[in-house]
Length: 130
Image (tube, rainbow, N blue to C red; front, side, top):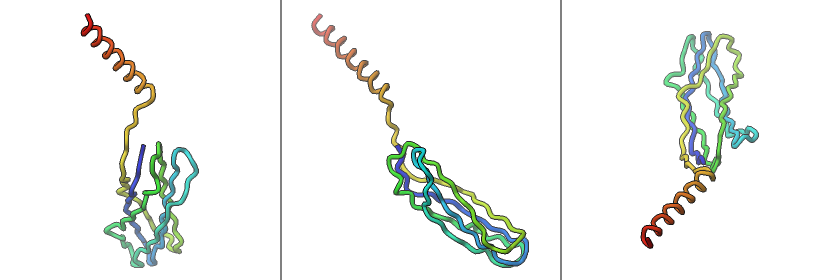
């Protein structure tokens, strides 16, 4: 089972021509094969100078504490650009997910372990009485 706390990722924008880049990043999550739901978004604007990187990268932190007891989680990061700059690039890097994972044995493993314990108890009783 997974109890997640945070998702962090860095974004970098580059403009090859004058004009700022207005970029929106939105994070979606699907828990246990369900539908994707938005977890929120952030918007950033790169400088409007020629061939400029927004560096160091902007770090986004998304709260994932609503995801508890999940068997599987699929995350998507959507990128939107509403700027008029024709020659640009944006990318996502350094994606990290934080939280706790608890390994739960399968029911069949528990049943086999129980049979093994019963067998050990019976054999030890036979030795004591015999």
